[in-house]
Image 1 (tube, rainbow, N blue to C red):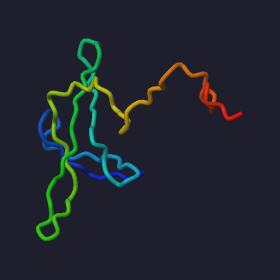
Image 2: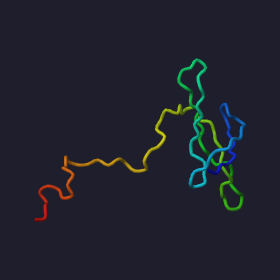
Image 3: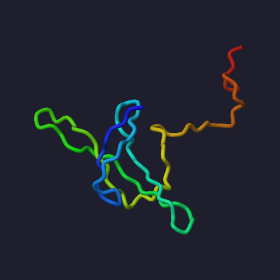
Image 4: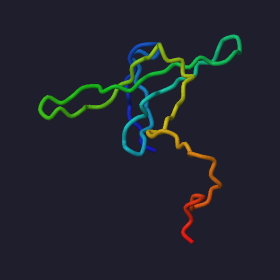
Length: 106
């Protein structure tokens, strides 16, 4: 697996540079979640960092890497993945046949 040293800004990881694994596209993940164990043994606190563009080149406007910024509003309990299309809803209470009832070609 390939990794990239990525700087973190804000929150408890401010100023640190950590190696982050890259995905199949060569980019680090959009969100980086850091579980912090509770001192009393309760459920861990999750710190959420969002990926932002570090800088752009002057000539072509291409990005020059990524950085993570702390997101204090997100508690990490939300969904991690959402499909880019809506869920399919089947109309009617069909039987699952390929030919709908009443329209059979006989």
